[in-house]
Image (cartoon, rainbow, N blue to C red; front, side, top):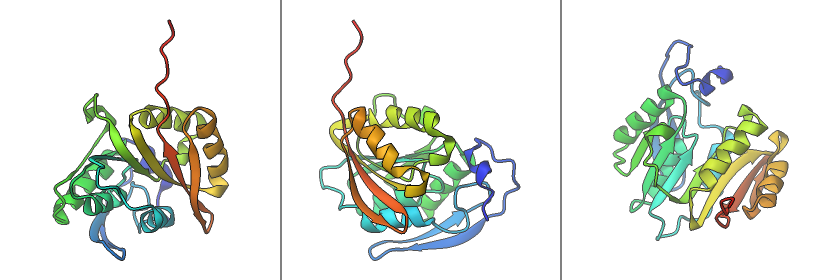
Length: 208
């Protein structure tokens, strides 16, 4: 079992123990280095794999993609392979995971992906697409704050594809997003996971 609480830390306290795994999809192969103290370090988790297998094709006009909660990079790196004319930005709080994601980009000859902390992203950067297995276990309040921050950085025609486990509140999360202005649709459901598509909302008016 992964030491799950550790992956929320900027600097995991558990001792490093790297390992190599593979991600094999019909159109993409990745050789990945993982470690203790990162999310799903023993294998690419089922939710991320399901999202990568079933999300719609990435449109040709997408130029900027965000992998929110990138971990060691599987979602962002697959997106970079599938959309070679776009640039993928992956962000995480876990510095060990960020370092691994950049190592994995180089190891797989991927040059259109950058992994960093949120503070290192250009402040004016907007995204045509967000692809994410979001960190549901950080709690509802923190999750809502996180999603508000990043979903509101979608371009006007942008969208997000997210995978969330049903028993961790995918349906209530979808309802909340729709209620506050992000039109949300379920694209698929399998083995307790939901894939949600979330559309950019109208800009919020500033109080006068």
